[in-house]
Length: 120
Image (cartoon, rainbow, N blue to C red):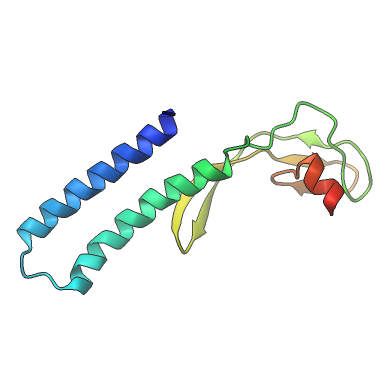
């Protein structure tokens, strides 16, 4: 089992234990009140899963050879900045490679793979 999978399982177990403890302390809670406790915790868990899945095939960093789709000039690697991502299912922080074209002054975050670029 991977470290990421272990982390998700641990987070899920902690979430369940926390919610059961909350529920024990609130025996008169309505279904809406229970959902209000579950939703933010579920979103946090799913946010971690979504980031893991987004990075499953790497962070987009490619050693060399990327060219600008607009002008064909070489792209410069500018690092792997992290950015917050929000979705109805969850939120997280995603760090992906960023490349810049000095000729067009445009950036690509993240770059598309060779297969995606040739299919476009």
